[in-house]
Image 1 (tube, chains in turn blue, purple):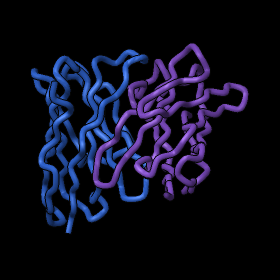
Image 2 (image 1 turned 90 degrees about the vertical axis):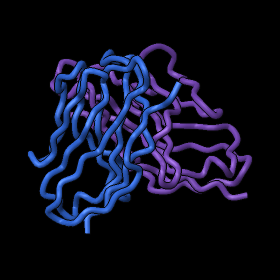
Image 3 (image 1 turned 120 degrees about the vertical axis):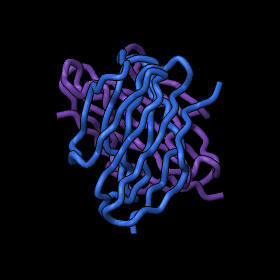
Length: 114
Length: 117
């Protein structure tokens, strides 16, 4: 089975632009979460979606939005990019939201804002 | 609020020696704890988790972790380190059950493990 797939792997954007990042979870997994990892820090929670509904939101501005599709894939959108949005964006897949289920992470999308 | 702390930015060990990477936690309710490893320019790889049960949890690649409720610690250990274990290690705790963010993971700042030949 394929793992968690994220695309693109790298991209460079200019301040003020918009970006869309994509994530395909493991087959059969219904929950997708997004994390931002700034260089030298631990990942920070952005969103969790389960069955196409938002189940959690971290402390990020409204420029960040996400959605989950019927096939459980997900997109993260960031508007009006700032230099500080440069980071590794990680997607995590989970079978469901029960506490005993683990999280499987993708390899991430490296976003550089110039 | 849930939180984890990794008190060491870097741990250096010689190959073949035992290693310990420290983690302490603060939670309301029962803790759900995780260890992940990250190699350069890669995502996070799951090592092990503690949900309930035995205090000694065995995980991938020969790693194990000891849950200590009285000391609120969840230290990662390996009896014999390999050079290939050199990476960035993260401890994480799940958000509080019953809250709007119960499904999120809260990560520590990470500990760089350097294993010298």
